[in-house]
Length: 203
Image 1 (cartoon, rainbow, N blue to C red):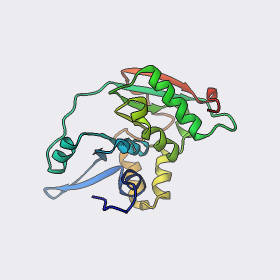
Image 2: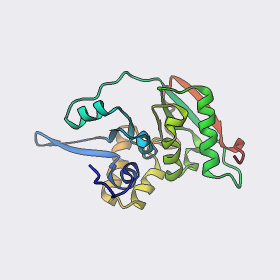
Image 3: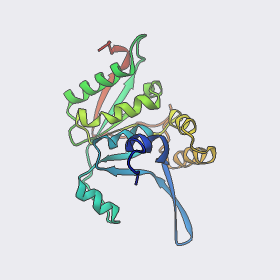
């Protein structure tokens, strides 16, 4: 629980609280698993920029989770968004975000998970990813997810996470096949959308 007047919850979560990989002890043994989040704020999806599954839920669902009850959901359709090309000189992060939002609205992603991938994922630093993920309610998706890659690891270190934990996150995600790099295979998505960053013009 974040006390009042301490800052914006989803920003604090992005910059400080989210671990990306959690470690819990059960019956004397330690278990590692990917971090997840449900929240009552429409900006909950911002954490998707850090490679954490998270989306908004209603107050009753959130209360149930707080009280230790499981959260149930139907398996969603997942739209893979392949990013290619490089933004031209003078194109801002705002231009990129607005164009991606426009394309996804037109495609129709309401109630679906969106996952970004492709060779140009590396062009987007964490603040840009968090902004695009934060806009998920604007393009209608349940969430806009960015897989963990070297940009994510750099951000974890930059934002003060320990080197030991950050190295553990990378090692664990590589072991379980969730760390994204140029050699990562393309997952099987329900639908595919391709966005060429080179074609984006100033908004």
